[in-house]
Length: 559
Image 1 (cartoon, one colour):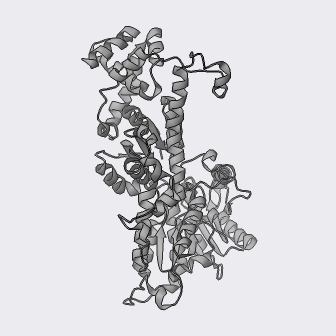
Image 2 (cartoon, one colour):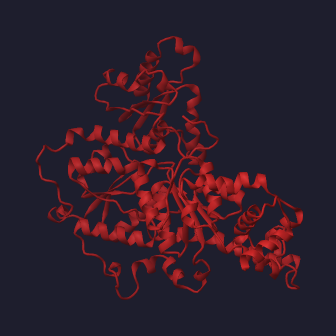
Image 3 (cartoon, rainbow, N blue to C red):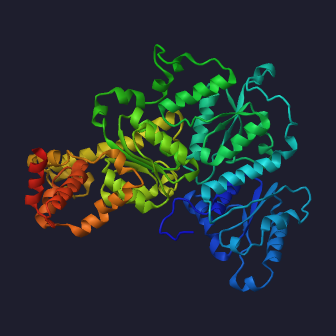
């Protein structure tokens, strides 16, 4: 395993913890040393839950390694089963305990715990990570609980339209939401409400809030909705193979995807498609009735957003959805797209190719920061790591994906999916750009007779440097030649990006008058001006960048 300051995903046993903590009646016994019990803090601090996750640690110490640690595992399993009386017991090991090779899953299977379902987990911590661990835990739990219901070979697959013959409303399962996911609680509520409005019932939501008995009811639904492919993809595929259950795989993030989700759902269930979802339908569409995003996209105000350069990085599902919303619904120019979800790298590469980009597939946040700096975006959509990187680069950022911090788990309802989710995206993405422009304009005109101190109280008394017309002219001229967006997002471009940030700054020095002139340039092109001026200095063998060099660069690129 690679030691790092930050990581996008924890080891796979954290994924197992997420599934166990998301469910009711499930307990996890984790073979782990004392130091691996830190995962409890993720749920109490980040999720702000009033109870610790349902997990028992063996918490072996260094002195235990000379004895029989396998006996410690068996004792912990027996005590957990007796004390908590779970409806299903998960048994696994942390990354550290994997080195001891006690095989707790095999030990638990041979203990004879009666009718208690025991699910052994193999979590290879040195080759897999958190989301894989969550998906594997959910998959193994569902397989174990449904093994007695498997239909015999050759039995006809159930039709998603059988609800008509049974004289009931259609019902579906919502699969994939967990604790420590990005707005999962709010997404489930929003999608459940959306389905109810279209006459569709929700049978089971899992893992979040489900019990083992609920998982045994999964085949009774007409089809499955794969809300989060990173976690529910394997389960949906297995249910499709084993029980013939159809799966809706469109993730309803954004206006277009929500409409496509409803079309796919109605088509599989044999429901009549609402008239206001049909392409070219007259009157006011459902999207326009439920979300402000379509109206704003057609307004005059939205022209300010057209062509804004945006860099996107996160888990595969949210990154792909963000790229589609940014490019097709908000008129942004996507200049970088990537993910840390290697299991879904193919899908992200395909989405990037449609935008003329090469996807950045990495779990190194420094490589992401370097690619971000090279792309010179005006907005970053990413994880909490990209938020920190964007802050250092002076770029607005909105968090769209895990890993997240406590501020990304709001007490209010803030879904990402459905019509209301589109409103949330609109607010979270547009406001950083609009407010940044407002603050810059206030800085430009702060010496105007109307801008007395009392009118700027919300700035805390610190006004940005004045940007005279000459500085704006310099910005417009120097910022013109920008490297192609596709090159900025490629893994191979990471080396060039590093040169454009870290090593470049080490070789070049800005003089005080050069920095002062740069500070007068509007923030939304300042990064491009810095890059192009430094490129001009390198091409002309200059080590110091003064105000004069900045104006020379302006004259060079204006010619």
